[in-house]
Image 1 (cartoon, one colour):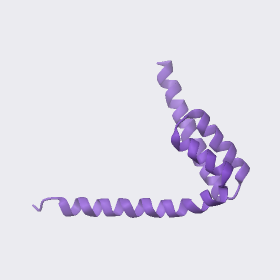
Image 2: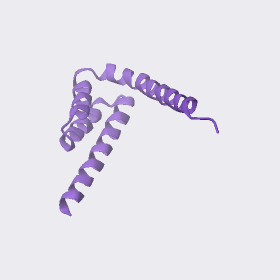
Image 3: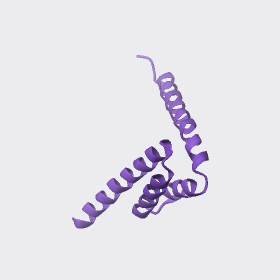
Image 4: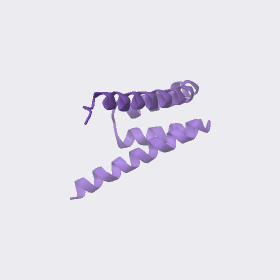
Length: 92
């Protein structure tokens, strides 16, 4: 029971730290973005938080400029996937 609670708290803390890091980066608050990215990496030692932390430490300006393009690409891909599924559905 305690392990499940610890796992849930770690996930919540990770998500919160990643969100705070992103918001700080978009507001050009680099020290806060670094601190929150490091906190996220401490909660989940995996590729995504490692890349975010490395990006915020090494090239925060580039990471800040990549975010809007990534958001646009994700939205466009989701729209295309929805349209593709709609075209593949059999007509009734």
